[in-house]
Amino acid sequence: MYDTILVPTDGSEGAEAAARHGLNLAAAFDSQIHFLSVVDERSYSSALADLDPTVGEQREVFEQQATGAVERLEELATDPSLTCHTAVEHGIAHEAIRSYAAEHDIDLISMGTHGRTGLDRLLLGSVTERVVRTSDVPVLTARLEPDDSLSYDQILIPTDGSESATAAIDHGIAIADRFDATVHALSVVDVSAVAGAYDVGPGPDLFDSLEEGCERAVAAVEDECENRDVNIVTEVTRGTPYRGIQEYVDDENIDLVTMGTHGRTGLERYLIGSVTERTVRTSDVPVLTVK
Image 1 (spheres, rainbow, N blue to C red):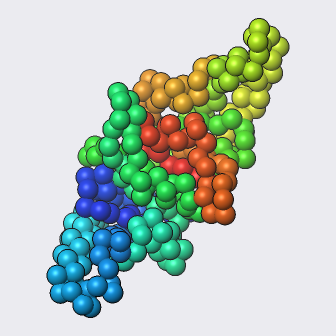
Image 2 (image 1 turned 45 degrees about the horizontal axis):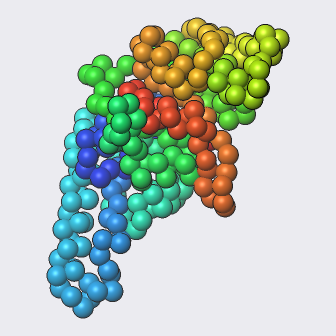
């Protein structure tokens, strides 16, 4: 499933965390791994570099920093069976990452997140957010250093039965199969959204109907797991979806979440579903998003 994995790096701790996850998956899927650092062309002017030697010197510094960043990640690749590639590109970071992924037939991008606003909301780096929103290949985001075991024993697949949610099922099950993990299929009836659509409040029949839909959604994941001989736990609950996902992650010691994205704005930008976006921003465990 993942023949080639790309890890972009800016030299940050988040990038190193993402690299460890990328290397872990590369070992499991016998993948080639690419480490890429992008020198932002807006930080210097190539035209001025020919005229002003100080600009040229500045460009060299940026290139050295980028080279050091990929070399540090390459040092993490201690498994002699792994094939690693390193590259330094010039351009606008998220565009260069997408171009590199397309040119090298990348199957998965692993990126770090960083920053915090408020008590529980993570601020994705703008580069990471743009890659997640626009990438045609799955993107794994991670903000915390994984523990030494790097095991994915419990994998959560939130689903509402939609096409976008279904896209992530195969990825979650494939990873579970490689790591001998248990899949958790969770569907949350969005009580707040339903209640907000009624002046008096929805009747019990509507909730029953929605729960039936959620039951069908998790049953579809269950069928796929049984076909692959993968252990599965199913759960249907009521609440606010992203909070329900967070609580389930904490309660069940989930190691990885796989989710779909959906929507489109403009010609090339994908709008992450609000549930997915909030989960990516707030999750302490890695989240794999699939378009």
